[in-house]
Amino acid sequence: MTDPTPYRILFVCTGNTCRSPMAEVIARRQLEDLGWSHVQVASAGVAARDGSLPSGGAVRAASGNGLDLSDHTATFLSGEVVESADLVLTMSAAHLHRVAELGGGDRAEIITTFAGPEEGSDRGYGVPDPIGGPDEEYRATFDALSDLIARALTRLAPTVMP
Image 1: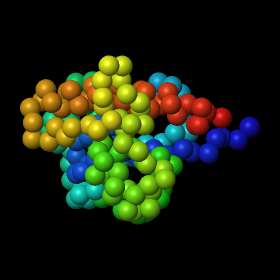
Image 2: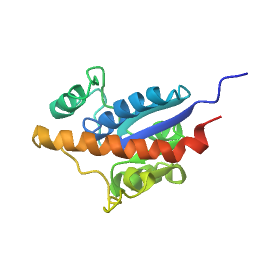
Image 3: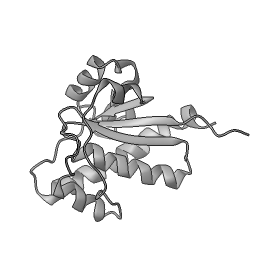
Image 4: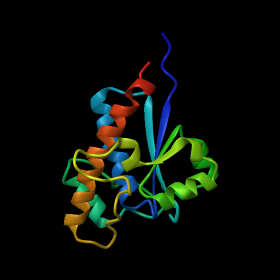
């Protein structure tokens, strides 16, 4: 039996220093827990400066949940980066618009829409940016992303499982 073809998920935010790097490490852990070794994740930002380090709040939120962002460096969202992904999950409508401009609109969706609404809430508008906020905002963003990614992976299971 041959290994399944890799399935690539790309998370996109603005600077690739807060939300999308947290989403990347959260997804990596959840994928490992599920045993989905053929699903790969990456992240990028529509206004990222290649090589920028993650924000301190994102590092602390990840660390507080047993995840390490110390090796992350920002990646600018280019057409090549979009093209490399099978699914692009953005943090806002503006990010989705940029992905569409780069040719990935047919493979992209706002993460809150893709994951489906949480019982009793309307989360179709995206994930708020915690940049510059207190650590509590980063922790809340981390928790929201954990939930969204778990629901997104549940939705993806029929598509990505061999």
